[in-house]
Amino acid sequence: MNDEALELLANLVRCESTNPPGEEEHAAQEVAEYLHRHDVEVEWQRVAPGRTNLIVSLDSRETSVKRPTLLFCGHLDTVPIGDREWSHNPFAAEIVDGRLFGRGASDMKSGVAAMAVMMAQLRELRGSESWPIQLLLTAGEEVDSIGAEFFRRHGGMAGVGGVVIGEPTDGRVAIGHKGAYWVEMQCWGRTAHGSMPQLGVNAIDQVLKAAHLLYEANAHARPVADPVLGELTVAVTRIGGGIQTNMIPDQAFLQADMRFATQKQQQEVLKEWEDSLQRYQQSYEEFRYEYHSLLNRSPLLTPPSHPLIRVAQQLLGLDPESWRTVSYYTDGSVLSAPTNLPTLIYGPGDDRLAHQPDESVALSAYFAAIKFYRDLAVSYARGEWTLNQ
Image (tube, rainbow, N blue to C red; front, top):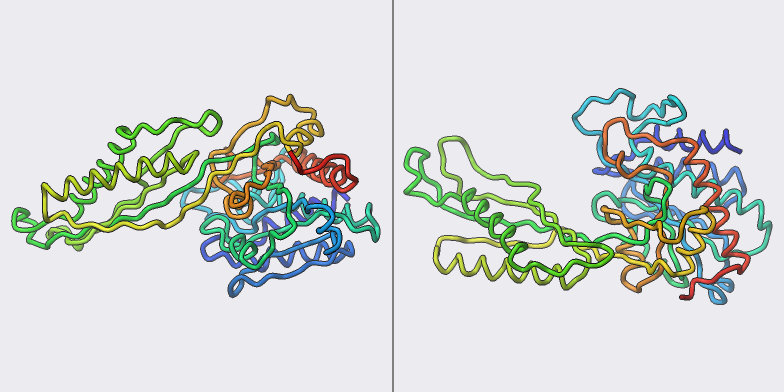
């Protein structure tokens, strides 16, 4: 089966699903065709034109009522290839020295393919028996988690008791990640000739002041670091505006990325920022601004003592204290965090290679992930452990 598993991974990497625009349907079709060949039924969940979730269930409604479902989850989209030159064609799935190269090889088509192969293997093992195992492949995780949101809104999490997310962890067990808050601010000024800036109000200067106040707010609030997920981070990631070189701009914007371990951290810094913006506005009446959230994702954390984490460590032969957290957020923010479902993050890819030129995955890690997912699912389906703490 290794040859067929390798073919599935290569076909997925060759299948472009860059987001934006997404168009994950072609990648979903690759997985669906593979599963159909192994007598595994799939359900298509249309999210938007050309965009789809793929759902695979080995359970029945009756099984879900008796025992919670263990949901395996991965996303079908990838980030763009970027402007830097690649040594390997990003959509050719070239194999060199035991590594497969291409966009999504680590993040996270290797995880997706490994989970699909697992489902085919489970189909052979279980026969006609109903097991509380489900696979969800989502659209849009790299931008707005549109697929995960759609799945949850339409009742997909009913009966789910735990989640396994195949994001890249370099073969280690991860127990959580920070939340993410993306903010956009607009500032308005007044145009004037570039040679007479004193006659206008420079909106770019206003944005730069707002950015400075945001960093100061983080320093002044000094929210307490979480013992596991760590400190809140703030980064201004985009600034834009202006009309032309010889005009004072009357509009400008900034976007910032905030990663937080707790809602309290987030609220403390945002309140400090808003207070400082208002104080500045009182001293400079022509400072006009508005800001709104572009994205707000909850943090995710599962106790390392939970059976899902403990069993994963045992199956991998890892020290119980060797768990890690990841710097990125996952679809678990949408699927697991609202109801505090136990969530394991484990994937064959190396997260240090994610979103990079010449992204790749070790084939040995890919095949090891297939075995791990299968062993974890089988041990749960056969009642060797539960999802209850």
